[in-house]
Image (cartoon, rainbow over all chains, first blue to last red; front, side):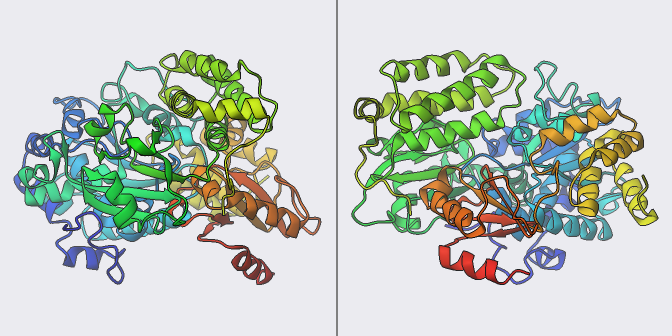
Length: 427
Length: 155
């Protein structure tokens, strides 16, 4: 398999513009701004079948086409580098090791949508990533890939790195805009959609880092090349998979869209961490998506294959759990996360996430009540679909799937008033 | 209260990056925290004045984002990730060790002001778990021994 997104990361000085250019870098931007119309670029991305790598899997070219064709006010592109979904660490790798690939994708996207500026919103904890990006942005300005008269085309666009400060919710696209404007990161009701009224009320599009990093090669090598990689025409391109948990070799692996989950765990990941502890469960798309039992893990890692078994590719954070894992404890940890990260605007999410966390805490500590398992499911069902943004769903799906698929284990915790999992240690 | 001219220049440059001054809020608060170690009420008022908003608005922002410190913390600020992937690889044991070694609980600062310890949510380092962030830097693939060596070497 040819590496596309990670082809530069092992090169010496992979962060420098010289190394990036020597590998053909910025040819895509030059080609776009000097020989293609804005519409041509959007059409190429549409034909490539590229779908958003941030979690929702929305077709990128289609999203771009929602921006106004007639320009009457400033347009903005926001690069979502607020990578915070538990289990996900691919954008960090791209930004820290090969920042120019992302910057080139940003500028091509900005050109396609006639943006006046592209803001890269990077999570506050990624201090190194922000430093690397800042340096790369300075280099890009010096070489004429950002700022005035880009590649001699007469087109101007600013490129700015903006740091978050610790809030998962700011990865949600409307919260990201609110945060960028200098507010608490509260999501907004849609409509209006960002392409109509986004950042500062202007037409705006928000794309994930990996999504934008795919774009330069689509422009240089063609939409058909990209569309030829992957499972089918709806699941295309090269993909970064983040593998963590109970495996021998956790890390970021690049493979075609549709990599079999078992191949990721057992071949690329070197198999289970302990030979005597087989696979028990796996979360395939970051902690928000429904968990899979071991027997459900013969599945391809792409949008539609995972949707078909009622889970999702999400942000491709694959979290592997072996038989020593207590599912009550695992879910408690997940629910703690969402309770901590709820922005507090919507009552079902603000109250429900805390309530679920407290119930899980008492089950884990051996004080669970017989009605608690059904109560958890009931609360989750009443959060799902009843909030401004998807954080409510993200908090509900793990609860619904854990208590349904591992009900016996939750029941045993309540009946026995303790954990009954053999060898439940985590080192 | 005042900041030195160099600080003011940095703030001006940051404000110039955005269509509206208030958008520079997080970046200016980062500068304040770098200068002072935390964000005190007087600085919140200064930022409000500078960006054309109210101190209440600024405090609302400071209190929303977990990385802004609302009180002075240790010189070496340890932020331990304990979310699922880190938990599966031993972050609870790591946290217990740090509490014992430093003699403080989560959210506390050692009496000499050298260390502070907090639990944080997923830091996006799940493939190199367990890990913590020490001030700006990530320390990954941690074991009790490597943590002890690291902390022994700090002044």
